Length: 287
Image 1 (cartoon, helix red, strand yellow):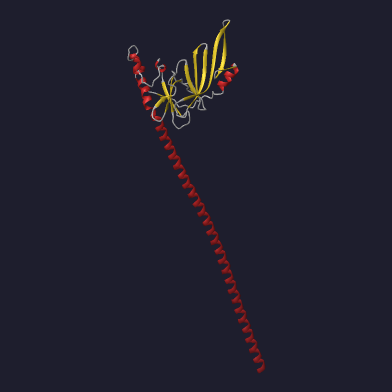
Image 2 (spheres, one colour; image 1 turned 90 degrees about the vertical axis):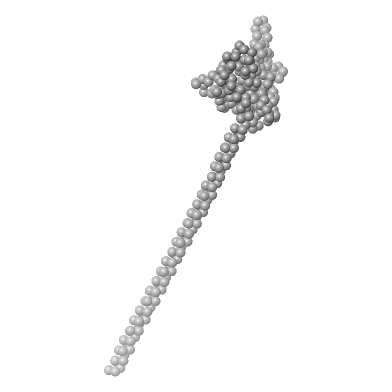
């Protein structure tokens, strides 16, 4: 019986020890699993934080680029505004040189073309020294426009007259005078010509000035000019003339280019090569 008791005690002790070891093992496994879970969760959290940091860095980079672009746009807009202001100022400076000439025409208009002095000796002397004779012959609306014909940066002044019709899509008054500036003085581009009657001029788009005239029923012509390097001297670049005479009571014409006889077809085609008329002038009525 003693032996049995001892065996039972040993058996019970062994079972107790086994249970203790088993419990300890379970605790160890649970602890290891918890640590593994915690480590995995920490890794995931770190990955998320890293991704968020990357996204934030990308957003910051994008915002910096946007800010740089906005600043660049502001600088560009500022330059454009400054350039526009500078151009307007330059344009004003380039056109106010003709104020004295425009004042003469304005005085003529405001004084009704000096009609009350027509029969007096003071009539012609009443007009300004820069006003041509042809424009004084009858009362009409007077206009002016500026255009840099030769492209040298200085505007020329065009004076014209006529009645503006409401139905006209493009207003093209009759040209009477053309002025330039030589750096110190206002100069008539064609001082020897009186425009408005048998002689007149028009502007072509390519910087060419077309002067057309009719000295009689038997002779007419068209000359083409460019303004010289001094900004005021007209330089003739081409000339066409038609001269007629009677043969058996029938008019017969001969045609010339720069003094050399050409055919009628060559005469008309030569003139047409220059006739890209300038229509972009901004006419302002003189009051």
